[in-house]
Image (cartoon, rainbow, N blue to C red; front, side, top):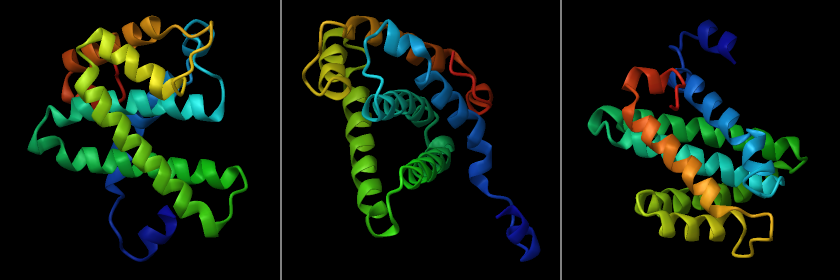
Length: 173
């Protein structure tokens, strides 16, 4: 794709600047600690929900930049959508229903962003939101919402304390 863009004179893709941050978000979401110690279900849904949780924290940090972060927020969301499209296609879902799946994922992401924005500073509310989102309201005995909430709050605090340029470079803490 880069070859075609350069061949036809298109400029660089502005989303490229957000790839290090998105890569760090996915790496954090894949950390085995979430699943082994936090009891997050190690399933497609559980992994999506962890990416959505960490992405939500990053988007909240970007929102704190005000107008300067508005474009980056939209571009990071586009990187997420591109990744999810690739994941859905990799699962073998055909062109006819890819859009429907992506629409559901984007809606879920938006809902989680709203909930985490409201709950990140309120430990009981965050734990309740995590039970609804990570465990679909039915946490098993291995679920540790307090542990997961504490780690998410630490990431949020780290993001707040991290410079804008370091966040863009993929530093979450």
